[in-house]
Image (cartoon, rainbow, N blue to C red; front, side, top):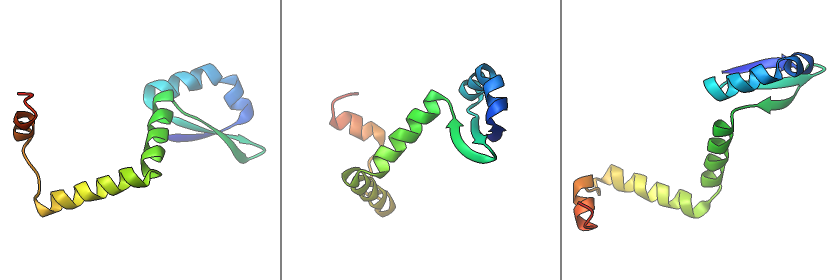
Length: 90
């Protein structure tokens, strides 16, 4: 959920907003003079966003994901149990 708040209100409720962001995965857009200026979100949500951006911006990783998707569509997959046996993990 994204809530838009003016800076003055955000300043007055800052501790409460941090609690809400961390507990409910809420995002708050802070405005100044009616214009969006900043976003407050939980650290976990921020970390997940950065991780996603890093994956999406890495051509090698994205090529690997696309190959995996093609393998799945073509049926070139193994059950987990077989993979674990091959790796001698089960």
